[in-house]
Length: 149
Image (cartoon, rainbow, N blue to C red; front, side):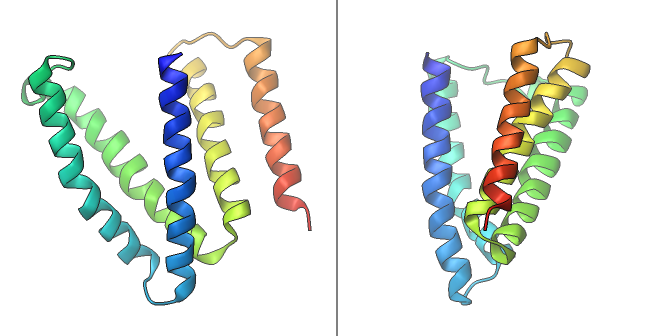
């Protein structure tokens, strides 16, 4: 239940935040890469502060510097470069070029569909008929949403 509430909150924050971003990009006063730079600059001190508070509370391991090279390499490549930089750059460029009503659903459907498939193929998570059907239905729904006139 807690995970779903947090996921819902994340989606709500992202949904509202990206509408603000689209308005800013549409103004023509700021480009997508500048918007990412501002987003990251504002988010970074907040994230470090939250990390510090969480680490001090003991709710999360504080010794990330002792996590080891393979763990930090995966974090840097996967979360930092691919999801953080690559995903944001592509998303903001898409948001600048297209309609939020099409860009956001595509981006936020391809991501979970990819996660379900990689969870199954790479992480060994169960692929059930229900999961496969859910992914297919969501992809179909986004196809209908984004191809409508």
